[in-house]
Image (cartoon, rainbow, N blue to C red; front, top):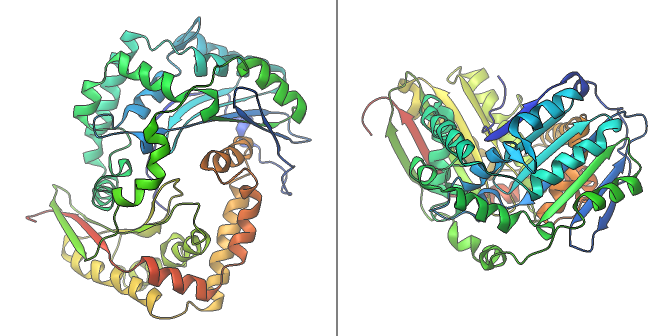
Length: 446
């Protein structure tokens, strides 16, 4: 049974997928060169000998984290519009331009950023950067496209009711983050999406799409100095701008916006489904915390691996769940650890109790050394596999740079995981897995 993932809202043009299918050589990644342009734009460049592709990743800090109750979903809406016309190019021009060179161009919204990605052969790196520069500076936000995308986003929001795992996940996030933007749906609410005007989209775009709020990362066949020079020519004339005051204030108030629960909470919601879906969540620190690496190991032990305790006890040993596992996404702000299960309505209470017993067991005593070593090996191996595709070679350094950890954190991560001990895992389990929040979606009355 595979691990669950929350789907991200995205606008995607994909052609020439064969370009992306070939894995990179299994070896330590080449060094990353960092430069800062006069306008504040951070440029990362990684030359990869033997790779006949170029990946360009742009991360714009923002996303869901900087939204308000009235603007929830605005970052997703803006991301949807980026490929629908930029500069002199229409949406069709952008699509056909990429198709003609067998490349890939995507725009995606996430909780902490908006991402623009291009992957092409080296001969077409100039075209890719030209298109990316248009998207970042001259998105047209055509009124007709705004209405078309609004209908599509609203349809996706309505369809969430047909995906009970997504729904229970969102209900839990709303309970964990009662006042923080992370508690709102990434795609927004129907009321908010219906209310957005073209001017709202343009205001967001002009506020956050400024060079001092972006990281551009290039990986592949270009020399590092050449990559920096090309990015400078494409984006060096962008004007920096001051970000809204709330962006600077947010880190100091986030803890108040997502207070840790002081008592167990259980929320039940009747749904017209054949199965019962459960989510049990705990607030956790973001990636800046020293507790982040041991929490990643704890999550792997608890439910991310197929040999994890939740999977072994509830799925394999007792056969009580269709799906069971846990996740701990990386966040710039306050994070969370979530355990989930899908079962029959008759077994929901038993599965809930057994999941809580697994959590209690992790807090009660040290995790055996062999279990910790297996989890660390799993995480370190997954980290390496995550770099197998060229776009991820560009994305990872950009992501850590955008988080404020610095691009070098990407190379340090395996070492930080390797240092985690059994005592560390028990310590963070006792510290963070203390007061659960439980959400159950099942047929019948609450």
